[in-house]
Length: 576
Image (cartoon, rainbow, N blue to C red; front, side, top):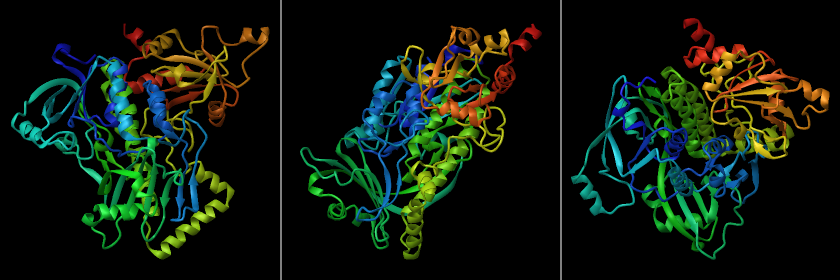
């Protein structure tokens, strides 16, 4: 390890911010045994929803930290997303059902539920400490670590009385602590990013929207006619109608010319707007607020031992529901790399790949969200006629309709060419630097599980119809074992070797074998050019580092260690 004085550090990592990004990162590091201190400015969670949606990629991340089943139990999976007119007639739909990554693509949630669950589940890690009502006010870094100054929050947004605020302003109680790294997951107004002086580029949108969060009153009905998420493309007043679990519901109304913030937030105005869609008497208004939105991304995501994640690194318009999801992806990408550096497995330089990889994908999500915003908020009569004609054409052409319904417009989880940790991508659609599928697999005894549950937390080497260890030297196997690598052989469903003669030639008995029930990974190998046999090395975040013919994994392993900044076994022995 590169740590000179372990006793000087109160934590391996300080995380500033306990939103979905900070919570996910705390779980990742906590599960891997690292000492984590989370500073959260607010003494309690915000009691209303902000984010409402997450996707299959993020559910796979929740699976990796052992919380997916708990959070999924309070979600609305596979809910169609629609473009509709005010009368509810459908212009276009998004309703993907394929589970390429093992989970539903569409999942609507109620953010207070999600944050509360993730926070409570942190209790399983005694090495993770959450300090609520403490705000980061300064930090200073050197070659070995970061000194963080924090104090009782002086200006809180919710959850306390005015008297408490006065008392907090008087007693600041400034304290310092040392950590090896600091992660700013502290929102769009990030104090960490501000103190680093890192600029954001992009656009601010002046169009204000009124958001109204509702809760159905006990014993009342009123939502059966709104079973799906709807973009109401009404040129006179664009509206978003968002389903949520347990009778929660959100409406967003675009402010038209002449509408002021003050007028829109009046109770009588809110009631009038709601009455076009629901009976207002059946609901409690939990929140009403006029807001604007931004499409911004930080120029730098790392400076020394300080890194940015979530809204601190990028702000995404809400029209694709990707703001919180992008932050969760940040946490996963950063978490395994930071853990490996802390354990001395990888060189510190691997952290430079975090921003390089995530920047392009986050920017792609911002761009498609802006495009969706433009499509939803059109008010020009000619433009709306053209948009509606395009949507009708899409539904009329089967191939295009399937493409849109299955989410072909959504940016794929693929890192930009030349900007990722892995082998050079072969061809435009090569698998290197892309998220590998996660099929449901069948074990030898018949049990069905998702593939990642077999692969563990570290690197994985998968042999398609072969032993993935073929061609590896003893030293390379030792090196991979040191990284926590697991080896698995994958067969197509019903393609396992059988008969005494075939079994004698097949893989060894100590190697896990699985069958791909849905064929997602078998198809992935075939599309990569390995129709019969092949090897894939997957990173801990399940992006493909590289693929090779069966028996030729040795060359990939050497490149893996080079990119991780480590000496492979032969070099170490030669040096000895």
